[in-house]
Length: 90
Image (cartoon, one colour):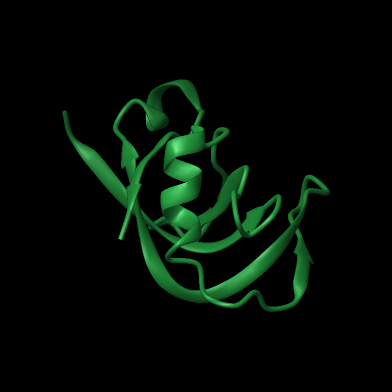
């Protein structure tokens, strides 16, 4: 399985267990991830820096922005079905 990477620029939900991540793809487009499984959300929470300003995606989704220091590995099928599935964050 091939994977691609994206920069994590924010999240929705509480910082202790984010629901979704806001990702900057290599094309510079911002996308919202699929819902994070609870175990991954808890793991991601340990890496989240302090939130910055609240921002809004073009579709109206409000999210907490963060310093762009985390990378998300995305499932290759994300490009096929349009759902961006996060495998891990580092």
